[in-house]
Length: 401
Image 1 (cartoon, helix red, strand yellow):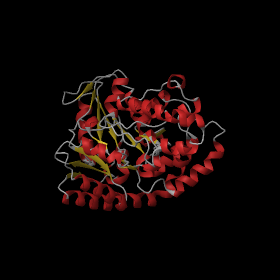
Image 2 (image 1 turned 180 degrees about the horizontal axis):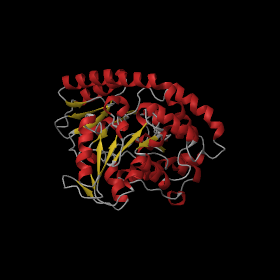
Image 3 (image 1 turned 90 degrees about the horizontal axis):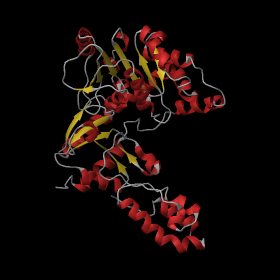
Image 4 (image 1 turned 180 degrees about the vertical axis):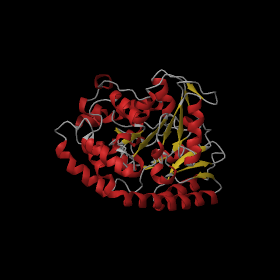
């Protein structure tokens, strides 16, 4: 557990500088610091009433806004910089466009803000049309969603049979299956009404199946009476592998624009399926589920296809360099055409992860993927940022041995 009470970068330090002239703050500061320390040291985040701490209400709120470091606890998902101050972190846990949100997306959202006082189009016509052109599919075969997670949840809520996933892979499939009361299976025979979910390219390994492999899998699943859902959340980095143009009965594709556009806080995803399936899913979807910002971005996608493709190409060059440098440091790297690397350091990385967090560098542990503690998933960022991570790792010598 890393506790930062009075480093110059800490929230407490900044707030103290602002309030230090207040006599009541000076009187209670030391007791408050001890209280906060014991709260965090015990590994929990407990909000105590200001009366119990015997400090003024406004200062209690400031103190209790400090984030506890999660230490060695498992990250179910990357990008948890909202637990602290986002600008203070170098975040390798979330696989997002390293340059940030593109200028055209920011401009589109600014223009769309004038529509925030109105309900969004419940039929999502502009968003559907934009996505259809961008994805190269018929409008009747696409349904916009509030992010890829919403697409996964919606598609897994249709059938009642088991949901088959092959580990290691994204943990949200199993979580959403359980939320819908469905059994999660692996390496078992497929029965009628079952669902098989495959992530392509896979998260966290980067493994990429060819369209022929996926379609062959669909035939086998269909012959057993099941359905196949293909999660193409990272397909913008390898568009030649998509099967969204082949959707048919029992084959559904879900996707997301979160990664390539760096808009995890906006939520824009989609489902591609046969028209009959899209109609069934739309009936189950929440009304007004797509906000005006996401709708505006979706409508603009076809105009920026070349820019998005160029971003994907730039990622490939950075990923290859990043992987090569890590391999030269003795790390076993699984790399693909994705904005992340799966790195095997050969020993337990728990202490190293904690030390990196102390330097405000966030990496993705892989225990939620079912992998041991010697694995980390590392986002591909700019060359300069990748070099900073490697320097920090080199300083640790990877040697919590």
